[in-house]
Amino acid sequence: EISGTVESAGAWGVSLKEFPGRTFKFSTVGLSAADMAARLLGEQNDLTREAVSQQVDLRRSDLTKYLSSTLSQGTSIRAVVPKGSPQNAENVSAVILAGGDNINQELIERGFGPIP
Image (cartoon, rainbow, N blue to C red; front, side, top):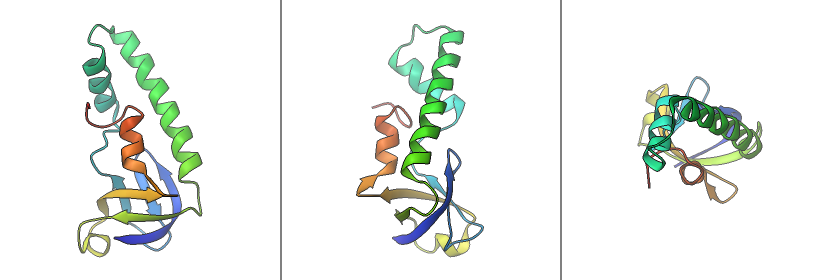
């Protein structure tokens, strides 16, 4: 487990002031358009291509709002990462914890990641 201060955050992950050049990606959370479309179709497989596209755009917007409010610059976080990865890898899968919340789990509950 590591601790740090958010420098920036987005769908691509989190960068921390204490680990320059490293990106901590949300483990087990699918944030690509393809992941979101698959999740949507798993929930409602009768959606049209246009409806899926609109829903993906809405989810992306919700994601941006959520991350900017939850992981704003200067926020202190903890991250559970594979041993040695913050020192040896540029892109690290992590479970991000902030303000007592598991951010990865929050994202999954908001419609990202694996189909429940």
